[in-house]
Image 1 (cartoon, rainbow, N blue to C red):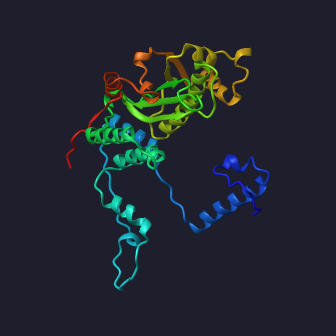
Image 2 (cartoon, rainbow, N blue to C red):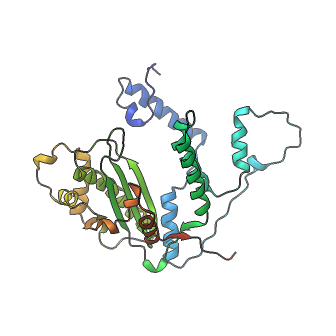
Image 3 (cartoon, one colour):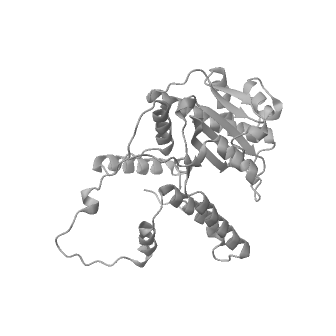
Length: 314
């Protein structure tokens, strides 16, 4: 492997370097060793799991969750083993002993990640923000997603953006929400990689990402026996972006937009997705892009079937 000053973090970065051929050989060699040594394991994609749960709810099915204690993790050793854990593993042990559900742990890790830059020089406002995070976790520990089987498995999506939402580089904040049985199965809230020159352009880029998620979910639903009838409706509150997506002709004002975002036009023509305007007050993905008033946030959460967990019989 040729030496390089820059170590790529993704496959795309590796294929753009001068020694990309060497990186490709290294990648292929590592993948081959994983397969040959069988040191890999398929992991369920959470979006797929949620889609399956919604399908079970719509079909009136019952499902159970189980876990298996594997021998190599919990086997008893007859001989005495003298070992001392490194100091750096102390925090992991404390986390393993703590009680709580996986989703709570994930939210804690996410909150810690956001707060990490301020740990070295934290102030009163950072303390207040931490208290708010703890208060939120306490109030929402019994909140979950409820799939209503009576609403059916027809997929619907919401796409929204917050133009120039990033304070430092003015990148837009994109948000999307895909729902089955009236509740979310896919959601995303991220900063876009590029700066948009207008809200229409920013919304158009979010729509393209939302369409890709819808196409993937439609194929998954077909595979599990919930094939979609007709086009998947994507609700959007930007009429300019919707017009741009439906117009396949040349437009001088939008010629600078990357061609990969025009993928949405193909799917509209093929009737896989359908764009429908929705008023901002009914845009369920609005809380994915910016902070809202408590009353508005509670309204969107209620409309997304997110509420107290239902009691189940063993």
